Image (cartoon, rainbow, N blue to C red; front, side, top):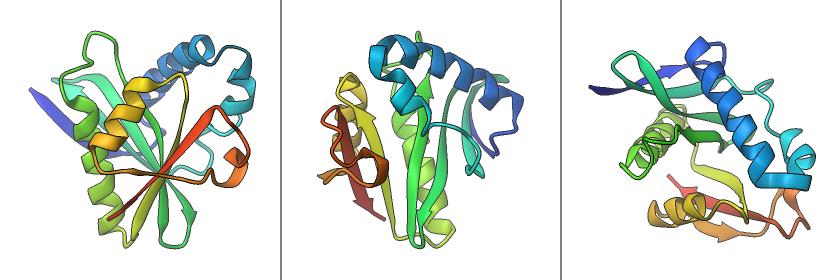
Length: 149
């Protein structure tokens, strides 16, 4: 049975998935990994979502306040073997609902040129491409998106 758990980055299942995500991104990002990795720490993240198959974590995502009224979607990940089943959309929808419940009006996010499945997901879920924000400004391998909640 697939369930979604609202939690924090301290949850062991979240930490397990993030380690796998970081290992995968180290390969996907190649020489750019160190640049992107510095922005993917859980220090300022308070809200995380776990997707569970029974008790086994198979996916995750997180929210980080970017500025008042704006949440940044972070650390979206689905284990290989569980992809292509709509699970990422489930996580994203839960994160958007949670951000709205917390009083935020929009979500933003960044993904890389080497993440075509992520880009397709965000477009499918109603995210629009925006100029690269913050640390991603001027980075031609990044795509930034926004969705009004």
